[in-house]
Image (cartoon, rainbow, N blue to C red; front, side, top):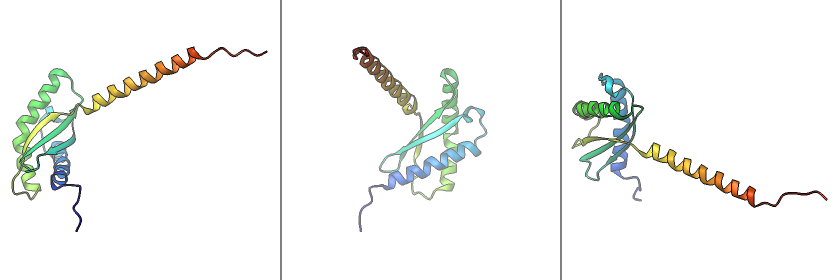
Length: 132
């Protein structure tokens, strides 16, 4: 029997991600958490702590309100997870801002800038074409 590279913590984290997204979308009545997207869940190997990464369209003060709403709803979300998942220990949920999207956008922007600069330098280095 071969050992899977996809660990139990990864499988449970995937299931938690889907369930938390569904709970936030369908069960939570708090208007502060309406604009939340669950992007990833990282679960410790002992399945005791789940870091739930979320993105929101809100900015600054409104974003803080979203995370306040998530913190307040975390007990309800955890209880609902307990009804949906058959786990010996239900992990503590910690909602965190997912910064990978804006970071990836910035990296792509920098790469595009490098490409434009390189193309501009190549155009300046080419000798003009003259037909004789």
